Image (cartoon, rainbow, N blue to C red; front, side, top):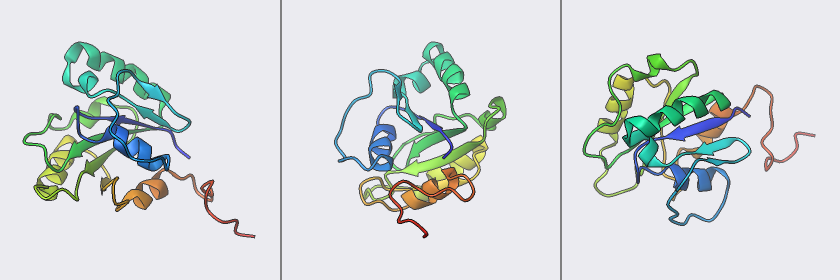
Length: 153
């Protein structure tokens, strides 16, 4: 599988998505520093919100095959400037999180990620599992079987 780094503002669901992708119990846990897992890099939201800490995200992105920009469907504004993905030499995907929340505006979050230049864009709920398989399929190398899938023998 391709290794992905998750970036976004505080509270957008990076750690919750990490827990869901790792098939762990979902529980709120504030990320204090960059966490490396086998195929995931979870980053603190403060790194995306602060221009001085943001430099670390640029460096850590070199350790991943794919950059995932997260935007909660409940956010009142976009953290990402237009065409920001042009600054990356990795594929940049968009991930709209918290689509199951009552106040979610999924279409607005998708538009913001499109404007940033993300392709493709996935809409997910880490709590219900909706949309997670599309991310797995995107990250899977051709012909690769996920560890928990039954053998094709």
